[in-house]
Image (cartoon, rainbow, N blue to C red; front, side):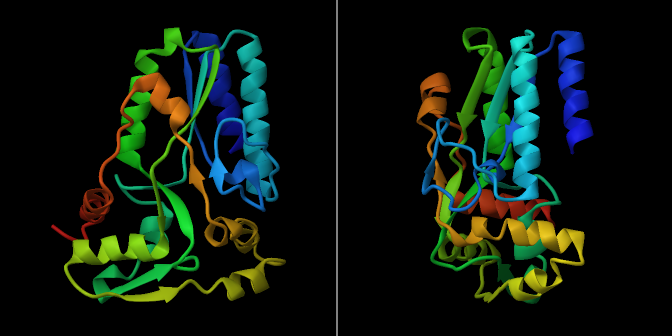
Length: 229
């Protein structure tokens, strides 16, 4: 990820373009603050978090050289296609009537519906000349418990679904020998520690923040995966 990010920064600098960067929550580490805003200290506790902080440090350096930057920080993306926790874990066995949830069902987790996030980026890009050279915003998506999120999935599927927990113990055991398991193990805290993103600064900048209701967003995400029609 570092070479790709650095290439994007260099391209923006060469072209005199505005760099729109999707930030995430890896930067903050464990223990994770219950409420995260633009002033929350970054104390990464994982390799992924350290990489993200390194990228944002490089972005800050480029900003000092004149690159206009907008960082929008969000939780776990879902909707619009494949490649997220939503389809790779939660909905992997949805057609068999099963949901796999990665964390305790009573813990709040921050989700970001991708079409809402994309709309937010466009609205910020439209007012970029009014923003500071380096602008950072938190995107408040759906900060809901596992109970609430899986219930929304069940409503969209119009039926009762079996919910099971992800087998983290195996991932933790394999951590020393399997690189992917090591990285997943390091970010398990994101599912065990309740958190949400404060969107006050973003709302002050663009007004009403794009926000598809949870039930509709989940249903559309399942449609994107072909799980419902």
